[in-house]
Image (cartoon, rainbow, N blue to C red; front, top):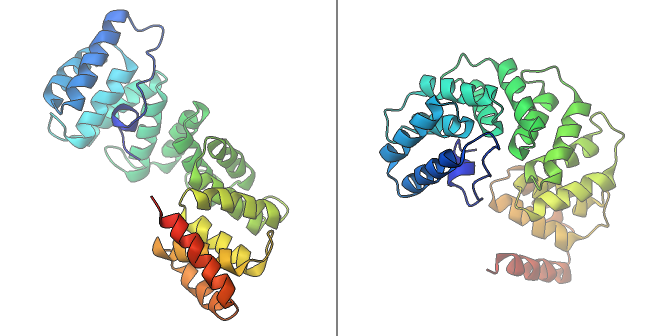
Length: 267
């Protein structure tokens, strides 16, 4: 998760808040152009002026420059201070980034409860990354009391936005009966969605489900396919299941799996 994902990623810049003047919009655009041209010093000058005048997105972007040391000496304490100003003004990206700084102990005292508090505000603002992280924190009891129900709710919110990690977690919640009745079919559904997005843990769980017939029809060709993909992405548990599949797979199923893997590898 990068501090300036919303700024430097492929997504378009969000519309400015109605309270931001048209002149500020133009200045933000100039800063963005300077940033994209790697003229970080020029971007810093513009964002600094806007930040001092109380523009939350400029405050958040200025914090990002300090967090990376782009155009200024790297200073995580200053970054956290600017993120806080933007976060308190309601900027969801700043709330998420401030939460991350608390979680990692960068420029802050590393208070995990504060991390959870800011993730919750960013999650309420609709950010899938924050929703996913908050779901994990509630599932593991990090910075908050463990609550599988709340974890599931935030995972569902992130999964609805296409977050693969949240989808995999929902599969685990249904597979392990964490706060819900065990439902192998629901688990397989979520594992399939996340696996198709490249989540290695989901690929391993989906492969195991195909091998064992848990919530999905037993299919050793699909089991070999998904376990091979998971192992290729570094999932250590996949190797054990692959050995089990090798003892039961037929030549026809192996050929089918190889065809599926070839299709997966095609551009």
